[in-house]
Image (cartoon, rainbow, N blue to C red; front, side):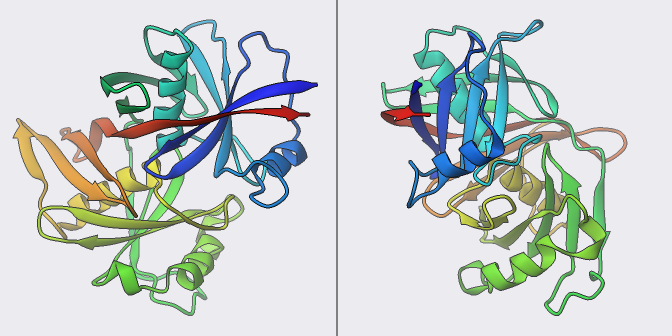
Length: 277
């Protein structure tokens, strides 16, 4: 069976996407992992299916590169919105593993789109002074932004031991059995610099949308860096990933939680690829 995949990248986080609105494609975790393998397959950080929804404009089905699923991906969400637009979809309310999302395309030059995506509200930001049995510095914040994240604030994110420390924390006892993504964040005056170790990929990715949202909210809660005030109880952080700039906006509600959270950044078409499944 020949299947046409489209490759998109959002701030360097790359995905294979297929239009499955006719419901004809069923992929096993093993097939997803093989397609995402950068040496024996096409190569990607994740794979997504654009599917029909009974209630919204479409449904986003997301898989990590190891074939695991059941989670939200912020950069993936922006990329599937860009893909849906290229497939002729005109409005962008969609369902994902963590519920309903909506998005706006702020600019479009034909290849690169700037996509603003509404993320899930954050109900809890839990501080940890340390993690049990972890032989690395592990103070930080746990929160769920559609995917589970742990955030550590560091002084020099470029020279942190991201892989070693991230892998230890990813498997920490407190976060099993699901595990956790691990973000390292450096406040840099008027922006945050963020690097992420992603479970499922089991390495650093160029950017992680849900991780960038988690990093901004952890910086806000810890008062590591004051956000921009853009309205009554409305805040914004500018973020630098490995190569690209993104932004996170949110509102503080009466319970000191983050609601009406939006992630903005680039989503770009890369290639059309035909694969025999």
